[in-house]
Amino acid sequence: MKKVSFLFIAIFMLLMNGCANLNMGDLFKPPTPEEIIKNSKDPYLTKGFLDYFKNKKLNNVSIVYRSNYIKIQDYISGQQGHVNMNITSAINEYLNHYSNNDYISKLYIKLANERGDTVKMYKTFVTQKIAKLLPIYGTDYQGVYTKLNLDNCYIEYDKNGLIKSILIRTHFFPKNFGTMHYRDNWIVFGRLIDIVQNNLPNSVLKEGYITTFKPQK
Image (spheres, rainbow, N blue to C red):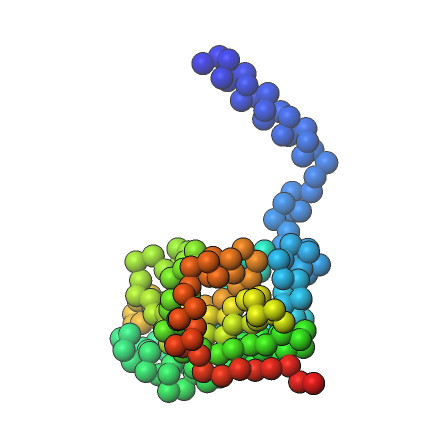
């Protein structure tokens, strides 16, 4: 036990000596836009979304940037100004009034086209199949009702026909004096694309295809 105690104290002292001149506030300082872009596997898309949101006041929206994805979470109930009585009414209200208010897909298509890539839109069942392949669910989804097939899927293809990025939306409905509604908008790239390309049958994309958005010449 004494050896373990001495080892613990020695490690603790080394850490303290190493951090002696470090401002503790720096440990919790959020990354700068430059650091976020540098860390991203798709710096172009990441910069595009950072620039878009830079000077906007975000109400009921939160954004997380990671190396292999961007997650934009909309609190739909906050945008509506109320929670719903149940899940069915929450879904119906979303489909009737909020699903077409889609600034994210417009920005995604614009950015992809501007770098010379094509975007294809797919039916909602493709969204669900891709969502189930990706390891994207955190604690928000534990023990609550989720819905994966309310929105269309968008896939960016490069000039060689390979998938470069994907935009899907997933929904979850926690309960607290009514049914709250959150929508997560996932722009995925990097290693997450490898998971989709290696596991999603081409027949799914063929069956679910709707239309194509091509770069302007």
